[in-house]
Image 1 (cartoon, rainbow, N blue to C red):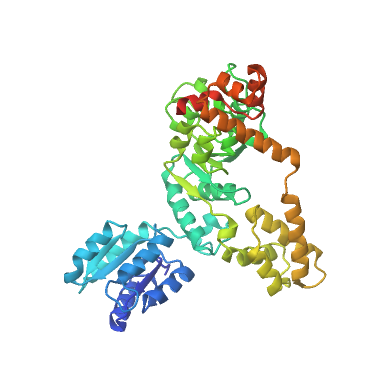
Image 2: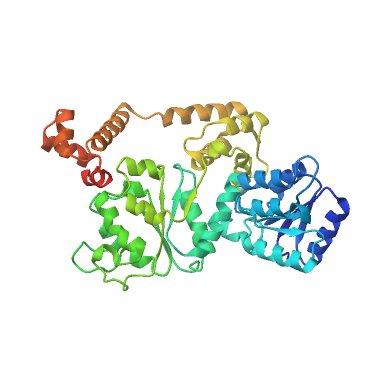
Length: 441
């Protein structure tokens, strides 16, 4: 019999704990039992349950404290509290803080099973090893932080609306987008990627529609993604004018760019991604506020690898297995170095270092000395050259000027001690549109 899902039950009364466990097991659930709040936290992180049932009054960490800890780590996991009649007001108050529900003791078995069924239905599986978890099989993680991202992603997959993924470079934004597509009703349709940073400023419309503006739209990535998903990466690299003309497609209230009549364009779901914190990108003029807010109804934030070191050993094991080199391992010193490294390039950079270490190591156990050398080399490569640093400073200066002058080019040029023509060229070189700052004033 297929399990209906894993449920964590917490109670310091062993008789009641066993009773609830038997009821749920008989109904087809996989049950994990914990006799204290502290034990429950350990079980929660290890088992990744789809729902939690906890008694309210317990010695040590009570139900309120446990709920607060669980909700801080995974606010999308449903928690049900068991409460006596005298503590119902406490349970009701907890529902205003995100508690899924409560049951009074003595509980009715049918009501218990009904509530658990409702909770599990709202908490889809994220375990890659489950048949239902195959959608995220390419994402290797053991981190509670990533668990929460995946839970939200699984729900977002069923929504069908536009979505924004935020995460530093190399963190796996496209992989998450592919997982969402795979879990959606569009899974058997195309998944098409458009990387904005690789396009010339005037090339966006042609890449999307297949022909230059004004010649009728046919072909292009939008047509290729019909019925499926179009993933737009590096959204903040898109020129402001192209961002403005993308809005109708995101909002579904017009054909893209006004070239295709409303209601006749391809049926495509838009998933977009950016590296920069969106609010900062809006302030700096990299991202239009109206485009951001049209996407931001559903937003997923991928935490950097440095915030989830527990994933590193999982990724090492995955790399070894993928290479078919099961006799290979990393020494404790090597593992410690990898777990403590800052990883500015995130998962992509880690996998590169692991691959190099496996290739270069003459021993079955990769030594710490080799990993240390590879990390030094990676650090040197991460240092940007002087010209790149200067361009970065120049752009920050121009953005600050445009913010200060509310997009007034003449005033900004006077402050910068440049003539208007030269100043316009500087703005164009960095893709800065003065109009963006005028709308924010």
